[in-house]
Amino acid sequence: MSAEPPHGIDVLRVFCGPDGRHGNELGVVRDGRAHPDQASRRALARELGFSETVFVDDPERGVVDIHTPGARLPFAGHPLVGVAWLLDLEVVHPPAGEVWVRQDGEFTWITARAEWAPPRTLRQYASAADVEELDVPPPGEWRYAWAWEDEAGGRIRARGFPGRGDRIDEDEATGAAALLLTAQLGRALNIVQGRGSQILTAPGPDGTIEVGGRVRLV
Image 1 (cartoon, one colour):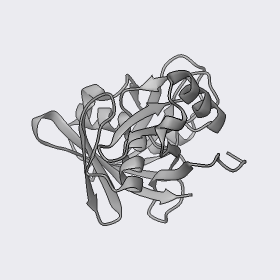
Image 2: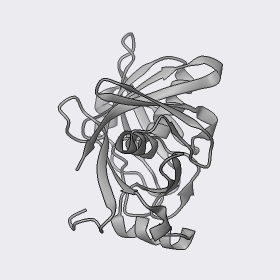
Image 3: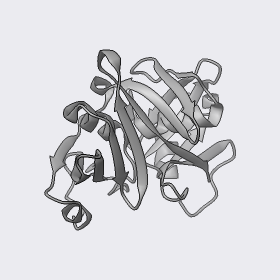
Image 4: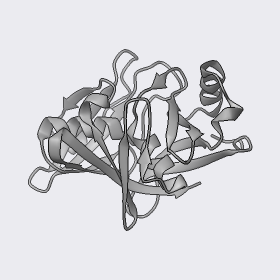
């Protein structure tokens, strides 16, 4: 986004790399009352042009509402990591359910369930080079392309293609897809996505999964 964001909106980068670069841009509207209905929220999300924008409806309880430029989401990974870091929350309440948060050094972690994540097509490739050489596919399905960089060490190279036909051809860092891949593989993962974003995951008890990363204020 080239222009300055409107007043009252914080812009973050979530799931930054070890050098603090990259990460997925996120808009956070601290006072959701400024956009009280779904139509105005979707219009602002379209105007901002980020893959997701979060509206905070209750900062004390962590009640939030998540929008893409074209849809409302019950759950999304990088928006919840970002808003939890920004507001120093211990729990976040998106429509999907209660999401617990913990801070561990430079990483912010959320605990969620794979069934909360929107559908994604997880497509494995033979090598990281194959993933890096992919062209953006035509709209149709949300595709998460991934390959092992180091299977023994749990290191993965990935790219995410929303396929929605909006302005977001490629998602730089996708917590929900990382959640689904972790559930499928049943192990902790260290994912490098997009240009160099980093997402960490770890399976927890009772089918829960932790997703963690670095957040920076733009």
